[in-house]
Length: 295
Image (cartoon, rainbow, N blue to C red):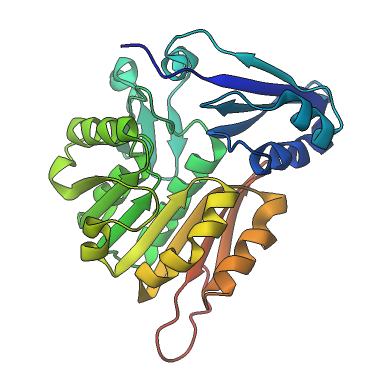
C-alpha cells in the first residue's frame, strides 16, 4: 500500500535561529503535519524541515523566514517507515520503545513498548514524545489516573504507555483514520487492546469522547497552534483535580500556549524540556487549595 503524498519544506540556518524558523513553519499556512530540527553537535548550522499533506507556498515561507526555503514533493513511498530503518530503540523514563526487529534487545526492569509506525507519526525518537513518556512516569509516582484521553494519538504510544502504567480506560483519538488503525494494531501488539478505545475525530467533539468524560488525564502531543485552539474543549473535558500534558511545542511557544490554558483557569505546575522542545503540565484545581508540589 502506498503512503499518501507528502511535500517537504527545508532550510539550513544557524543553530540559534532554528527554533524560531521551526515556529514560523508551524504558524505559516498550510499547517504542517510535523516540524523537525536536525542538529549535528560538531556543526554550527541546523536543518529545519516540515512535512505537509499538500504543497506549501515556497515564496511565502521564504519571505517570512528571510531565508531561501526549499520545497519539494517527496516520491510516493512510505517515508515514515523508511525513515525508521536503522533507528535504535529509545529509553524514555521507565519505557523502552522498540520495533519488532529489536524485540530481543529489551533489558530487564523496563516497560517495553513495541511501536510500529506504519503511516502514522510517533515512535519515541522525537524529543516531544520522549518528554511526554518521562512526564507520564513522573506522574505515575504521584497518583493513579482512571480515565485517560490521548488527543492526536498518532501511533498510540502515549495511550499504550498510560494503559501500561494505570490499567484504566484510555481513549485514543486522531483526525487521521490511518493513525487510528495504527494505534489499534499497536495496542493489540502490546497487550493493551481491551483497555484502549480508538476514535477517529478532530478535536474532542465526538460522542465517545464526551461519554468518557470527565477525564483524569488528557495528553495532547500535537503542535502549538492546535493546542491553543483546543484549550476550551480540553479544559471542559477535564475532571476537577485532573491533569493535562501538552507537548509538540517549542520552548519559545510555551508562554503562548500557557496563556490559552490559564485563561481557562488551569494552573501550570511543571515543564519537561529537551533541546528546543517542551512538555507542559497543568492542573484543573479542585475546590480548595491549589496543589503546589512538582510532579
